[in-house]
Length: 318
Image (cartoon, rainbow, N blue to C red):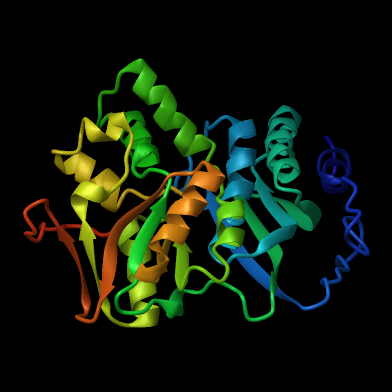
C-alpha cells in the first residue's frame, strides 16, 4: 500500500519554475511580480454534494481546478499557483492517476503550477486554493456596480443544470443534447482571458456558480441598488431553449448554477467596447439587463411584466 508521501511524489509533484520553492517542503515560497496584488480563493468539492461519487476522475480533476480558475477570472486576476488537498477513502492508484491527469491538463491549459497541498484518508473531499496576480487597484470586485450599468453574461446559461436534471431523472434529453450538456457540467471553461480583458472596462464582476440570480444578487448586495433582467435576452443553447417554457427551463437559466460564466456590469456608454471584445475574443457576450436605483432583482418577460421567481440559486445550508 503506497504511503501518503509516495502518492504525492508519484502523482502530484511537478516542476514549478515560477515558484522559489514548490512541492516538497513545509510551505511553498512564491514571489509576486512588481506592482501586483495577490488574489487568493479556496473552493471545496464534496462527493455527494458537488459531484456524484462515480464521476469520471479525469473529468473531476479538470473541473476541480477549473472552478477555482473561474474565481480568478471574476477578479480579473492572472492565475499563477494552486495548492490541492485530497481526502481519499482509499489509495486507489488508478483513480488518483486519472484525477491527476485531468487536474494537470487544466493546469497546463491555463499555465498554473501546483506548489503544495495535503492528502489524508477520509470521505472523498477535494479542496483547492488558487492564487493569482492582478495589477494594484485593478481587480474586478463585486462592489463597483453603478446605477445605469448594463448587465452582461458570457457564453450561455443552463446547460450544466439541465445535464444534472437529466442525470437525476428529472429531464429526458436527446443523446446529442445530453452530450453537449454533460460537457458543460464536467468540463467548464473558465473565462480567464475575458476577466483580464475586462480590467478597466467592467465596474463589477462575479462568476456564476450558484445560479445567475444568486450570484448577481451578491453584486447588488455589495454595490447597493437593484437590477432588471430581460428573460428573453438570457443566452442559452437549443437544448435549454426547448425547456424554456417549463419550470425546469426557468430553473436552469436563473438558478441552476454550475455555469462558470462571468456576469459583469459595465457603463452603458461602453456597449460598443464590450461588443468589440466579444468579436475579438470569439466569445458570446450578451446584455441581459441593467442596474437600477430601486433595490431588488426583477426578471421581466417580453411584455415587461415581472416573472414570479420561486428560487434564486444553490445554498448549502438552505
